[in-house]
Image 1: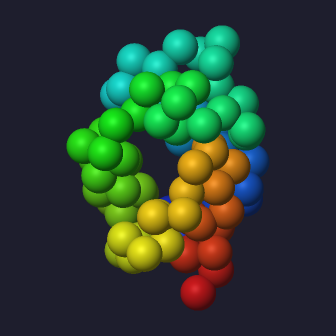
Image 2: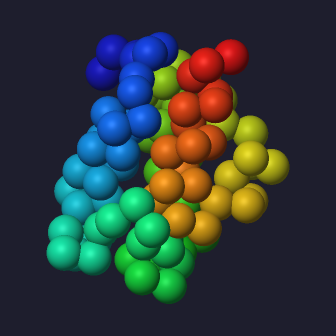
Length: 87
């Protein structure tokens, strides 16, 4: 897998939505920018760690755990990743 250092927010969202369906068996109908990871998509803390690892593989950058603690929705993940790749 090659790393991507420039992605638009839309590209990040699309990648995350696809990965949530493929890797975590999330219901595609429930995926939206405002979908809450834990409550709406049943993403638990182990799944969140797996997602962080995959994001590192895609971006080539390490997402700091502190940045992910405040993440609640898919859009929060998009914003955190977008900020990460901008720096």
